Amino acid sequence: MNLFKRIVSKLTNQPEEDEKQSLEKLGDSLKNADLDYKFAQLFTHSGGFFNYCADEAEALKTLQQIVKIEGINNFFCWDKELQNFLNVIKVAYTNELNALDDAVFITCEYLIAYDGRIMLSHNNILHYHSSKLPNKIIIIANVSQIVSNLNDAMSKIKRNGNIKNLTSISGSQTKLDSSSTITTKLFLLLLED
Image: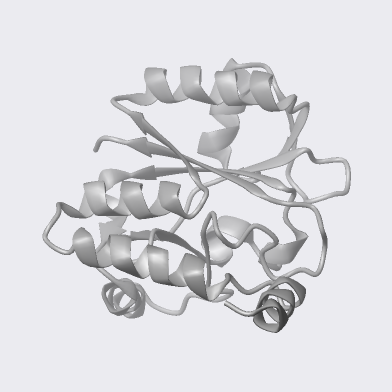
């Protein structure tokens, strides 16, 4: 890739072509793999931190380790069930997003195996734009939320009714939709159903 294209890709926050091709090659090599394996490989290849959890107890332990390692003191977490996790490990949280939040703890709509992306909606991030989220995002999901591709996810969303504020994120989208130079760390706790 020539120097000009590299500079433009950095300025526009677009992955370099080499990175895209590498992700596409990996995706092609995994086309016959199980969806969960394919998703995990592509998600981690794009820079996400994948954590498989056999049950909620293991998810709690993993969450506690992430909090400790990342030095998280306060979460944005509006979901009552997820707040129970944070109560158990004794970490502060707010129901409304504010500048003091070190991280966000949310659920997601779907995990897209085709490219290792995670689909979010207002059910997960309320009315907030993804670029306004803290730079540490921890998502908890179930294996049953893995879909083959974006079309499958959109079909399921249409069946579920009117869903607003749809977006998708991945580890390679380190700055989300923002021009900020702060990189985002994306953690996934994948629970067995």
